[in-house]
Image (cartoon, rainbow, N blue to C red; front, side, top):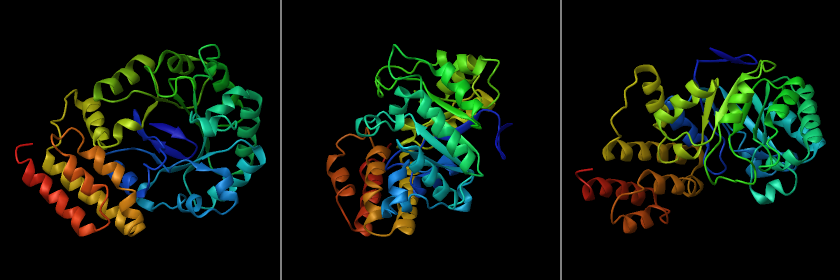
Length: 327
């Protein structure tokens, strides 16, 4: 078992990465169904919470069956981040996670997200201030460094632990890499092997198969792995990984009938939580990814991602099974 504050998770814990416009309640529900041990909200700007912006406040919503769940915040000003953390705490998540890893230019260039890797003293000072301001466990997600010349994650990890974080997630790329090239897990392993480190270390980056998950645990010794983009259109990856770690066996692939049923379930959940049209808008990305690779799929796909009629969308899901009877 691994412990993050008062949260207890199984060995080889599996985390769903926070992703903008992806990890909404309906997708978190599906990932929990398939065995994600911990999930996170979409990342939330501190400025949005402080201004009481409707979109940011909406992202605080969660249900009891999602627990344990974390709220991830980003921002470039210490006072604003502290105030946002206090607001987020009132939504009663299980922990507060600080985003020091997002590489998107409009975020990083303001000094937030991965931009904080250019100002380590401020990163540490912000983390310390948040730890002291809230009652919940505080964790951090970050990257190896800003670029190839500043892969200083081993030192950063010690500094963050020293000011009180309860776990650290490391994405195995620099900010300069964005999501290009391959994730380098060697430095994640160095952090985990550092005798000074006592908190759980969670690795992130390029976990796309059960086999790559096993390598992450066995070769680099991490306490958990966080999976992001590979779960979009394939949330059952959590189940595949857990089964492989436990048995060494690869589960058979999901049938098209199972995938359609899953898309229908998530769609119903999205409508239940968000209503129409928002519940439809926010399913469109998932519809595209669930059925990626089907031949001659363009016409059905266009109706799935443009229709505002739930009945028509469900008819399109039925049509998939009729059109592809042997998948």
